[in-house]
Amino acid sequence: MSASEPLTRARDSCCYRLPMPQLSVNIDHVATIRQARYRGTKDYGEPDPLWAVHEVQLGGADGVTVHLREDRRHIVDRDVERIRDSCRVRFNLEMAATDEMVGIASRVRAHSAMLVPEGRTEVTTEGGLDVRGQVPRLRDVVSRLRAAGCIVSAFIDADPAQVAAARDCGFDVCEVHTGPYASAFIEAGGDFRKPNLANALRLVQDAGSLIVAAGMRFNAGHALNYANVGPIAASPGVCELHIGHAIVSRAIFVGLRAATREMVGLVHTPGMGEIDAQD
Image (cartoon, rainbow, N blue to C red; front, side):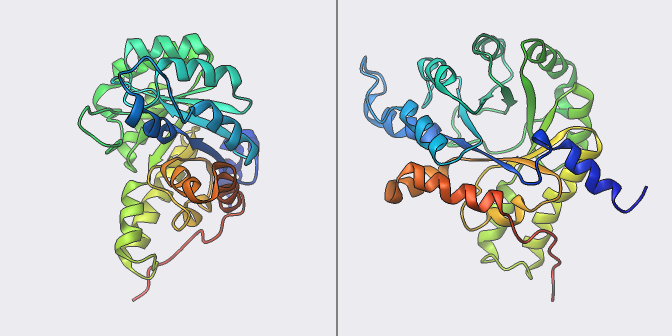
């Protein structure tokens, strides 16, 4: 293998073979604010997540992500239908691997469907999907979603065994869970001379290399924000980042369009790729 082959393979695996990662904005927490007041009523209330779709598109987002949870705690079915009809960029539906959700993703023609684990008591997704432990079932789910025209993604931990299982199931994409990296960033104060942070970044990047080598797209997401996103965006072969809470949080102060535009700038012009720990 030549020295340039891994980089060529990484570029070829990227969405549309662009030289920079894409940004998909998760707008779930716009619905969280709405549901804090209007859940359980006949009034859908405000803020309307559909308005958020228009704002993030005007801010330069490459995609829109929503997670339709089984308990409908924020995004609800009506939101999915309206957003899919109005979205003019890639529409990514996060979902549990259930028959109900497969049916919804197939009916609305989601551009991509990302399978994630769900827990009723969790505040947000707490870990990657155990693909390795349910290969036969997930192989069937992937097949059905692909038959409906969806690009199918697995949200996984940075674990080589999970990457291999995702390949065996036929997934098109693996999104690496960056929560541990984000936690290490806080603990180290963003100092990449600290081994725990450098190692956490390396785990994400090593998983990404395996994903690319397996012929899948390498995406990343979870707990990424304006301070920690740069090194992930600069990771070799990364195709797309999914970011939500940080953008919606900043939008309270600067507006959603501006908050999106700021993150687009960081993701589309990444810095700080390979970082070595120092004593």
